[in-house]
Length: 173
Ligand code: NI
Image 1 (cartoon, helix red, strand yellow):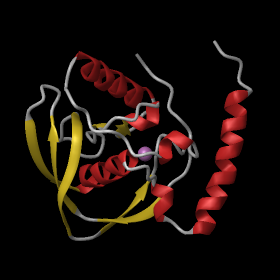
Image 2 (cartoon, rainbow, N blue to C red):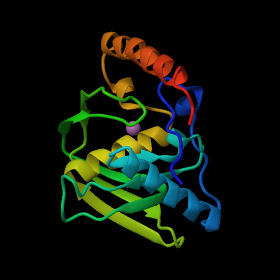
Image 3 (cartoon, protein in one colour):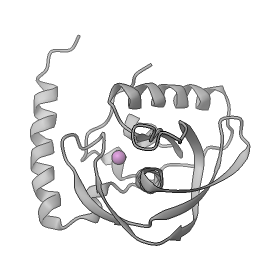
Image 4 (cartoon, rainbow, N blue to C red):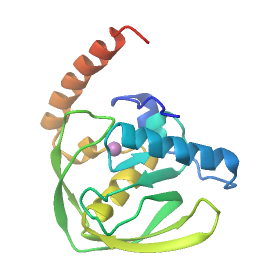
């Protein structure tokens, strides 16, 4: 089921998400819905708070840019190592139509649980590394515009106000 994606700023997007205690059917349903929602919106990553769920779950699929990669869901992801530097022009499904350069680490090692509750560790670079950092930020109440200048952020905030107003005026189907 495709879920509604919250638009920034939203109080839920500023909150810290809770760790998942048990990887069960409800988490697997959430993961399935998050993939459907991400693909419907043409994104490469999505975090549970973006669909209003304050749990530490992210989904990623960077195949459009990294054909060798795989769709991947991470439960309770924890970045355990960062290496190097990279600047990437980031976008976010919660901040439609905007993109800004953000400084990140080039390489990331992340520990997480898969959808069977097994512990996994992944080291990655390129877009997947950026996406892991961007999505784990969401779990801590941070969005990419928190990494840009106040001036840019305030301009984006104004534009998002107009996006929200136009969505609210749209007749519901
Ligand atoms: Ni995002």
